Each structure stands twice: as structure tokens, then as C-alpha cells.
Image (cartoon, rainbow, N blue to C red):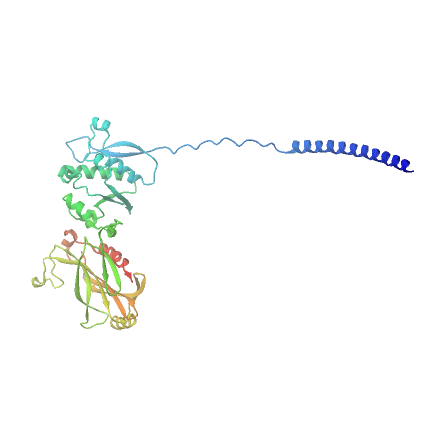
Length: 378
């Protein structure tokens, strides 16, 4: 029985083995077919397309203007220059001009006051409302001959022609280190209407270059252009308090060397110079609200304003080209700052419009605004 049992099991095992072997072969074949079918249905993996390098931007052509005739100092002709494309094309053109003619151009007869020694004189250029404001380093020792009659003709004709090739530029004003006055005095022209009477305001860095900080023990500081104003301490009347109340104030004064006879016109009221404008900062030991109420009762209302980031009020007084604007803002809970601008403008007398160093009314406003904006409260 034991042997028969053993035999039956061996027979079953053999049948099972055959069956499993056939099944395995079938599955292997099916798997091969599945894999083959899957591979046939897959999209082929292609190598990435070759990257074609983008082409460089085309060079930009501009003109610089040099002289070819020694007989006419104002005559210029264009010479082509190729530059890398740039948004600051006016600055690029001036830099090319200030490098002067090349050796080949000199051999061809081109002349200029500019050369490699003037290559870095351009500090900044900005274009505002059709005017190019060109700030130069101190050229007075680098090219001293440009202040001569012919030298200035060459300087202005070549720089202006180079800049005016661009449609956004209609006129050009120059400065040395942010201040037009030393430039135009060096060129023996002076401050005129053509150069906006040497107004330094459009040259953005002029307050940083010429700024002097005045710090008051009352808790504020202010930056002002020391090349324009002289500073003093004076007793000044406070119109908001009325009467003859006066306080000590820091006063910035700009005077012009032109005769001023006041509104009366009488000789005894004439002075040799005109106090063109003043800017006044006066701390007052009264609360802001109390001063505002007094000013409203005296002047029938005041206008809201902002000074140094602080809310305040303002009012104006004056007539016939002379006047003042007063503004008040709190320093702290018990004191107030008065910031004032007094002016004499060009409408009083026609000779003010051509007087040396006379700042016109519009430029006075810009100056006052810039100084008021510099106030910092501690």
C-alpha cells in the first residue's frame, strides 16, 4: 500500500510539472508579445534638437561732429561711429565725441578740442522737456582753451550738433559738478535766460554735492545748497501770532548784485543789491493747534500742506512781485516749526530778467520745494 501510494503521487507530480512547464512557456511567449507590442506602440525618444545661438543685436550707427576748417570755429561736419545698441544713446554719443577724432580722422583733417584726455569728463546727462542737462567734471584745467572766443565756438557747436541729432533734444545746458554757474562763468557767458540763469535744480545731484546740513537744537535738520545761499541767525516776525512777536530763526539768503528800490521807488529806499529770495526756518515755543487757530482768525482760513512728512497749514502774503509763503508744522507737542519762503521776482523790473545771478520766480519755487523736502525731524 505504501508503494502504490508512492507511485500515484509521482504520477500526479509529473503531470503537474508538465502542466506548469507548458503554462510557463505560454506566459513567457505572451509576455514577449506584450512587451513587443508595447514597444511598437510607444513614441520613439528622439534626441533634443540642436540649440541655434541667437544672433547678436545689430550695431547702432550715430554721428559725432568735428571741425574741418580753421577759418570758421562754428562749422562742423558729421563723422559716423558704430556703437553697441543702447537706450542711453545721447550719453554714448557724447562719450564718443569727448574721445576726440581718431588718428585716421586727424590725418583726414578733422579737429576738435576733445581728445583722450577729455574721454571721462562726462558725469551725467538727463533729458527733461527737450533740454539736455549735461554735468561735466571740472574741465577748466583740462581744456582751458575752450573759454576763448574760438574755443567756445568749437565746444558748443560740436557738443550741441552731436546731441541735437536726436529728436528729443532741442537745447543743451551744461554744469560743472552739478552747478551751471562756474561753467558759464568760465566760458565768459554768465547766467542768462538761454541757460535758465544757471538754475542748478535740474541737475539731480546738486543738493548732494553742495548740500550743507543745518541741525537745530529744537529738533529738526535741513539740507540746503551752500553754493546758492548764505546762512545767518536773525530775529524774524511771526505773522501767525500777529503784532510784533519775533523769534530767532535760521535764514538762508540769496542776493543778486542789482539795484533794488522797493515798492516806493524812492531813492532813500534803494539798495545796491537785491535780496532775491530767502528761506526761513523758525522754531516757535507754542503748540501747533494754538498757532493754527490764531492764523485762521487773522487771515480768514489757511490751506493744508505737508512739510518734511508732517501735516501742516500754509498761507501767502504779498503784492506786485514781492511776497512770502509761510508754512507751519508741529515739531513736538509743545513747539511748532515755521518754514517760509520770501521772494522778489522778475516782474518788478525788466532789468531783473537779465541781471547776473538773479533767480527767476519759477526756479525760486523749485529751490524752496527742494530745501523744504529735505527737512528731517528727530
